[in-house]
Length: 308
Ligand code: GLU
Image (cartoon, rainbow, N blue to C red; front, top):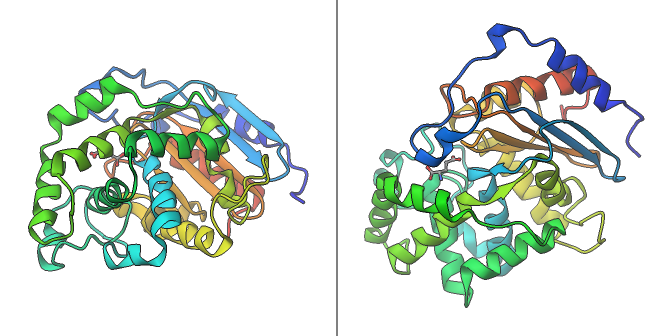
């Protein structure tokens, strides 16, 4: 049972303590559609494993979850392929940028982990191999996992990424040359760009990720999303690799497994206790939401609920 804490009051205290110095960073500019987002947005939502909800600000507004979705595609691929997935993608932090090509050259086309772009593209390749209609079936899985039938791709964001996705195009072709992409590169990228375009609110994100706080079981429907050992592995990967090359800083300041996206969202999990999502579009120099990290740092400091 989670200790009775008034998270709502904690969110209010944290946000009212923000100063001009906290209003730093820039909205992601390399995906043209994302530049249009109002940088002042701020949403927070926390749900405990006992299903108590706490919201703040723009927590019901949908935004582009971007790389956060890579956790859900990994979950589906792991469910389908099991441990064989680890012959195609590693489980180590990369220590380099999320879209870097450098490591792939000397590691022979095997990406360091499933959350950098190259790793998520290999996961998409696996889904293209295993599913009949990958875009439809991936979306169905996410809708089922979250219990929210309205979750959808945003075709304008997917198109926008496709037009500017030169690095991702390079990554998929580079890995194909090493034999680690088995399908047509355009087909794999189409799934990848759609995956990144998924929109959810903070509240919906928490619903979709709550199984990782409950040993792989959706606490609402009581259905098993993934077994507890794999749920543990996904949380471990988020802890080590969920924040581009700032995963160490996030662990140091926040102390929870989590995943961020360049849309300004961060989702974090306290296994056995809660799942929390924060959205604030201005990113720091490492591509993580500046205020999002600050909110989460203060939540775990004030409640003493980090995993360490
Ligand atoms: N769709 C983005 C890209 O491939 C993902 C960025 C992110 O959120 O890390 O560049």
